[in-house]
Amino acid sequence: AFGEPALLAAAAAGAAIGIGLFDYQAALARARFVGGLYLRLVLVKNGLALVMMVGTAWATRDAAAVMLAGGLSQFLAALAVHRALGDPPTAHEAARRRESLRLFMAYGLPVVAANVVYQLMPFANRSAVAAAAGFAEAGYFSLAADIGGRIFSTLGAALDLLLFQIAVLAAETRGHEAGEEQVARNGAVVLALILPSAAGFWAVAPALEAIAVPEAYRGHFVGYTLLLLPGLVALALMNFALNPIFQIRRRTLPLVAAGGLGALVNLVAALALAGPFGPAGIAAAQSLGFVAALLFLGLRALTGPGRLRMPWRDPLAVVLATAAMTAALLPLRGLAPWLALPACLGVGGLVYGALVWRFDIAGLRSAVLAHVGRGVPAA
Image (cartoon, rainbow, N blue to C red; front, side, top):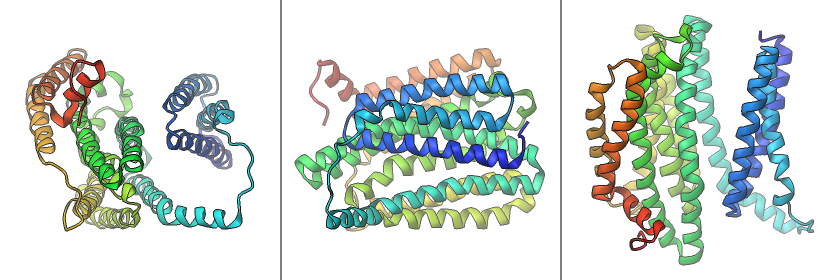
């Protein structure tokens, strides 16, 4: 049961405090290049969330209590590393505080604003689906959006933790040009992992629906996943491949413009498509909005006199390798669910991995060989 609306709102506010504190501590760990502490923070949070949320759901069967338990798990994880990330008290001059605030307003605020827009778009679309077709249909939409969104955000965040820090370090130690070169290589790596993951997720969606999706949601998950997937991929590529280009240059205002354009396209497309296609049109509108924002940022970053110099061999190779993997998975997609899931994962991994290794796509083979000490360091 959801309980009283006031109780649900209070639980959401409490959970938001815990999530905000966790995100702040995670950002501190990343900014200081303490990867071990960041990993410990994430592992503690995930372990606590699993135990506390599942236990609370089993004991109370109340959504507000589960939401509060999720926020509390993040708060406790942040509390566990608070001392390790703390600074000794220092007296900051007023001029230094003003300068820090100015830098945040110019650099950080546009990043935050763009992410707020990207969070509000799915929320508004769910409300539109609920208004057009009822809360049950909004639940079908939400399940596909949440599962897909978490897969790509988790994968992208894991990459961003390492890759963007390397780019920042390169810029600080070897100059701005070295930082931009590293960002270009990072973008190829992100694409090399996000795109095949999207193809694999589409391939296993029917098996995943049959095995893991509650019976009441079956028959809707695959359809919504297909419509939402282009937008989820676009959002991941924006956050983890294109945004770092503007961040390394400390010119983040285009991120706000991209968010505004994406929201506008989402709104116009939803108004145009909801009538003839219903909730499916709203899902497609969300993808159109994210893709429009991606195209805007891509044009700003990769064209014109100030464009990022990126070799196109790797993106093309990623697209071709993903297409080959998808072709190999098509015959397996129609198998019985318990056979299709492992077959798609195994065959897809083998086909794509073999192509990546053979052609050293995105320099991943060189990086692996360099890591184990059997090859030259990756460029």
